[in-house]
Image (tube, rainbow, N blue to C red; front, side, top):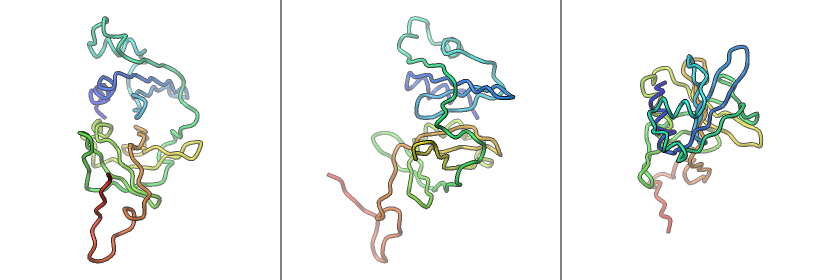
Length: 178
């Protein structure tokens, strides 16, 4: 995983969520509220230390939302605990952003490609999982090898049968919204 790409995500959104995960091996997770990434092999950092590390001038620090707390208990952070999910070969553009499509038996999910960018150098070793959380929701779990490295909230969920089931012979998937 490329730390610089995670930093770019936080800098673009001007949000830093830093989560402390204390187990037998202490780890921190860094995110922007829509995605969280495991910081393996890094010293413990504070949000202010991250801003300094990213060379953000101190006069601009107030522009950033900064939160540091313990890991949320409603999210499943167990390695490969979720249901495998299929990554489609296509992506779609919407409102100037690009979204990668994923599918399982319950629907199609669109994940903003910016959140997948930290893993572009590990594509051969990536597995995707539908990580359930309390309350019936889920996140996309990104595992490199056997270890969970990120959890990402879907940007869009499509459960309309017109999109999740193949179209009848001679028809195409076309839908216009007004």
